[in-house]
Image (cartoon, rainbow, N blue to C red; front, top):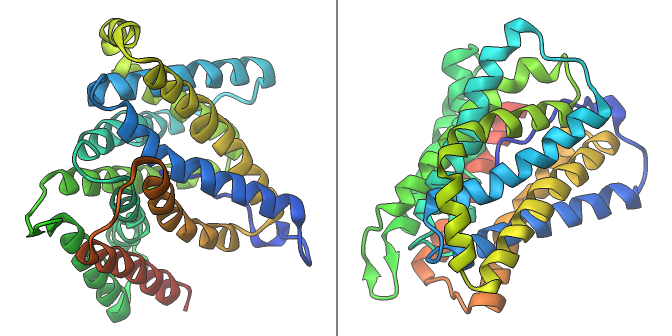
Length: 302
């Protein structure tokens, strides 16, 4: 999960229960949650940079096919710098930092840390866009970051600081900066077109790693190759399409609320698939991280 385009207005929301929208949301949650687990499977045979290149260069090829087939309007010259910086942060930096962090941080805790991204977005919007944050915004931020600290310090043996958790927090920060940068562009371009350009541009810094990645994939077990194929096709390509469908049929705010289901889903998949059991301290930290995000979001709406 990362800085997801949300440019649909509340006026697009359909009345009553929309089965298609909620099916799209369910698919998105499962695919994005499972990506944290599959990353853990692929790391080892692949380095963090190689896994990032395998996933996002492959996704960039799909994005290129989409852009060639649909032929959306080219980005305006004034948007190119924003797209470039957002793409590098949203794809290359985010993926490498997350992959480095997940070498030791389990899938569930990693997803809880990534889900602090809205807190960073609110902070950046406060200083860069002049949006009001308020006392409760700072309270929510403190709660969320305290939860991340507990996750970073939790281990089976008790408190033992894991610096890789900070790298995942850095990935969340990259995602938040990209979210703020792309916000004006989403008012001028369709969400899928913006995502396609971000994938295409953001994969460029990963191209030098492609030769080593190809060699590593050739020597890797079959499950790693299947894992990479899964990451490219389902969480990245299909996940963004189903998210776009949800945004077409629900308001952005309502759709985003469902994304709080990603961390617990990732924790459940990690338990079933890899036998990862969260420590009590880590579980408390995960709840605090999400609680802080909820406080920030609710206070911003008020």
